[in-house]
Length: 466
Image (tube, rainbow, N blue to C red; front, side):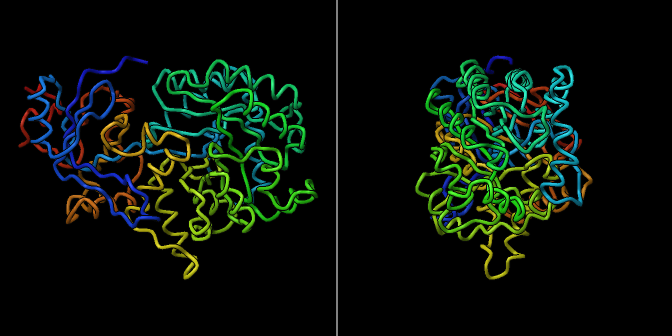
């Protein structure tokens, strides 16, 4: 990973959602010709470009201007649920969860036992996240510790903010994916001792789901949380009715699915449980009391026929919710696509749904995820003090998306259009801690707003200031 660049003065249309619209009703924050002064990878000043430029000059800060006019500058997307081993098997449509796991996902996951194969998967996976504008991810790693090492090495090389862990199970799954509570604890502690809080990496204790975990294995996971302070915990919950029935049979003493984790001491503010399509009131109350979060994975829920996510009761119980792509049950890495499907889901629920405005969608894709991962002071919006983790969304000239964005009356309408139409091809640049991840430092010039009449400064997109 290269070092951080010198000071930057970022210019563009800034759009973020720093305040929870579910609880405050806050709209998107928009700066139409905004400026961000980035020093040591962190936002040191924000405001109208003329004001930020003047303050930088007055302070004697020699910054390089990064001109991102055309399109929108938004916070980097935060994916709270995505599977490393499944990047090469996206598209297993037409199956329900347990059949999809058996026939499609788990055979591929077993292939990561071979380090050379796992290395290629790690490269494909990290590239897919960056290509989609994801700057922070909570990753379901692999059942094989060397593959988790390879993932975190690749994420470190590229500069992606990553939380990941060894996936553990001791029953139900294919034999080559199983472990023991003792081995799970030892390998998890070893991995976390080398990776937790190393640069942009953190460790997450990762039991696959209660169905494949004995009570003893869940206890071993809780021991890792105690032995390695600050680690997170992630798993699945209430995704599919058949799965829920089998979990109830496997844990007859548990009140519900959430209780299988709670009884083991695995619920807390650093816990993120994926899906929760079929919640119980008791489970929602337990998660709210613990400060745990839910990763809402709408394309996966639709693709696997799991159901329509009931957002309203989560919000009413005070359970935090953020977006996850759930690759490969989900249909790709793009959180723009997940935001659109989240909108569709709430619409399909009719009066039981919770209408989502533009601020809700950006919040779910950025700030909500940062808070769920305990990174609220670090990332998730474009406020002073945050790392410059950002995405430049700028559709390619000549596309329908470019036409709609170009004719949008304001930045909020442009964001709506990007949610409706946007794909990974509309991601023109990705930065983490002020360093560009997706290529050269120069901004691509074949996007919306570029023409032969632009001056050299805009075409180069960088110039000295002051």
